[in-house]
Figure 1 (spheres, rainbow, N blue to C red):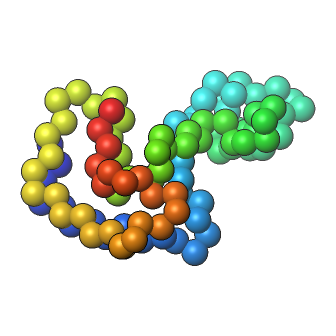
Figure 2: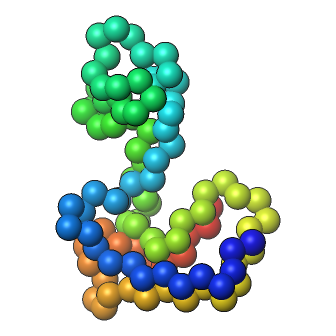
Length: 96
């Protein structure tokens, strides 16, 4: 359960928070000697992106919960800018 939380979502100066992090991946833990990056920190895939960073579908929500069974949200107050900045999800809460 998540309850009694107040969030203020604002764009940051570097605009880098548009993905969620599923690291470490097997590529991080069992890297080949020629792999670029640091073990258990970051590795780049063939596409040049860091392996394990996944873009939020539809943009970044204020609250994102992934693969959590039985999650209950209660008394969640979310403040977001109007109009929403580019890259923000129109839905403030995404539970998948």
